[in-house]
Length: 125
Image 1 (cartoon, rainbow, N blue to C red):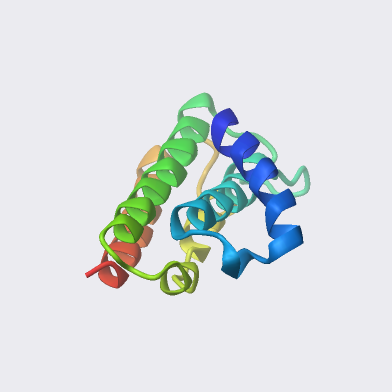
Image 2 (cartoon, rainbow, N blue to C red):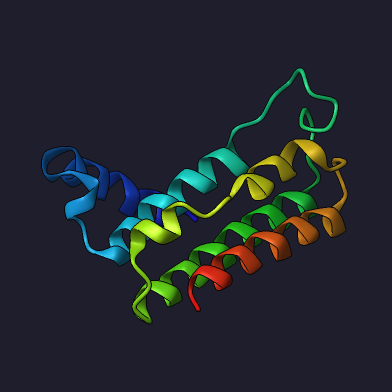
C-alpha cells in the first residue's frame, strides 16, 4: 500500500507537467489505484456510525480489495485494454464499501470487491 501511494505521488508530479493522458497505461493505473486507496481505505468519517470505527479485519479486506482491483486493472492494461476505458469503470461500490458496511463486516466488503472486479474484467475482455 505504501509503495502504491509513493509511486502515485511521484507520478502525480509528472502528470501535472505532461498530463495524465501522456502517461503509459500502467502508470495511469498506479494513479487510479492510489486514488482508490485514499478514497476507499484511508478517508474516514467520524460522523458515520459505519465508518467512525473499522475493525482490523475490515480494514485489511478493504486494502486487499483495492489491491486486487488495481492488479486486475494492470493485467487488463498489459493485455491491451486502453487505460481510459478502465478509468471509466464504476469503482463507486468499492469506495462506498467503507461507509455501507458494518465496522466488522468483512463479507460485505468482499461482495463489493467481487462487484468491482467483475466490472474491471468486463472492460478487459
